[in-house]
Image (cartoon, rainbow, N blue to C red; front, side, top):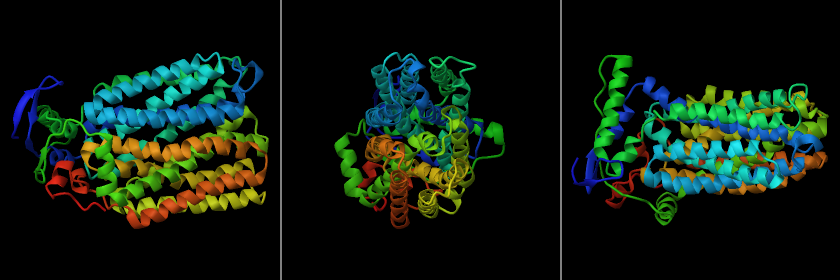
Length: 499
């Protein structure tokens, strides 16, 4: 490496000027090892917490609205206002922590965001008034929004290009393991033979805190992203981390590692502002920007709008007792996780364009079919759940690929903030307005209103799939720097095509 050096905030020498490194190529050529499993467990398992959080709130909405719950709150407020505040917090947290993640590193922020998330969840369990519940739903979302930006950027920068697609899709899909667990947990905790009505729902949130603390202990051992380190002037630390990863891989696998496929020369950039992010995204990569927005809008409306009201639909139209909706939700959650798990590998073999467009289009078409059957009165609680499981098998893989897409198709200096930007814009449009609008549609008791909710979600997923047919980037098995060259290389005319 070349360049001047000075003392940096990490305690080592900070390089200035041009730096030539083979760190990205060395990370990408590593075979899978226990080192990679540590990353997956330490970072990816937080989506289990998120899934548990969202599902628990949906399933306890009926209980919270009961007179003896300990809170003066209605089911519509839980599934509507509280859900919208959670998403608003997530959007705000994504932008705030995404900006900090690109400035101060992945590791610092994914420790801080988990701490925020856990603290707010614990405070939710102690809610004594509706305003307190709403406040800490917002702050819980604030923490989880930061997790999306910090973790997706770290995962993509640490996982070899050969496995990046399937690992990213499965990790984001693990949300639904938590959803299944939360659904079953809520059944147990809402059983008044076991816990009083004003205690069970509080214990549900408290158990999520316990699981989060265990994840926090594992996460301490996950390293900083070497890619972030070398671009921010900490080349020696990046070299040390990569060498350690190589040594651990050789201990696990034996043999020899193939030679790295080249080097890259960059100029360190201490920070990237919102203005430069926007210019880079919309001036240099306009088609990718349209793709990212379409994917996030489609999945945000489907998940943040409609699934928040799934329990209400079962209660309103099929007279399912509020204490047993968790069984149905656990079934659709299993379908959601099986999609990314079984289809994830195809994102690296069949390719991004085929899989992203295919999952979005199939889920949209199947949801249109579900709405037609529901409108005709052909469904029961069981068959509606089966239809939803089929829809979400594909939709979950597609939604996970939205995060994969925006985390790999923009320059690495902007990665966390780019994830945050698309997440915030897409989720704000679909996730804040969606719960407010669809809470009324699904609780009205009018079949046509719920059919409209289904059709809006299906339509947006279908449109996003068509956009992916035209604009998806063939990023499978390619290094991140090859998909989108660093900003400094863009200035010297060495960037990849900005389409």
